[in-house]
Amino acid sequence: MTAPGGDAARGAAAGGDGGAFSARALSGRPIEDVTLDAAVRGDLSPADLRVHPETLRHQAEVAEAHGNPQLGENLRRAAELTALPDDEVLGIYEALRPGRSTAAGLESIAARLEAAQAPLCAALVREAAEVYARRGLLTTP
Image (cartoon, rainbow, N blue to C red; front, side, top):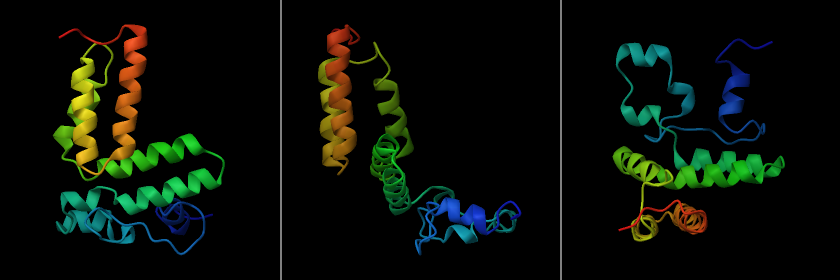
């Protein structure tokens, strides 16, 4: 049995596949260095507490290899979103709530996501717009 935060926890953070992949924070700091002691010492930055897009893409590969393609797709979209500021991600989340956006508004978001190199997220927003249109969940201009 491994103590919390031991090798088993680090393996799970790295994707749980037992491979050589090493998970890291958005700052690039190895996940093994993101500890409570480091936080108490004041050695961590906000970027040390955010996941790196490569870690999310690796986790997507692991999910897909273990028969969970939907989780893999979600993790790949999450990797794209790491490049966006938090307020923009929250704005997208709010806009995607049924009844909150027009078709044009959602298309504008999708275009911004494409420009930000987030094509999977852009495709999801466009798919949501199509579904919302069929179900009468878009607002009118």
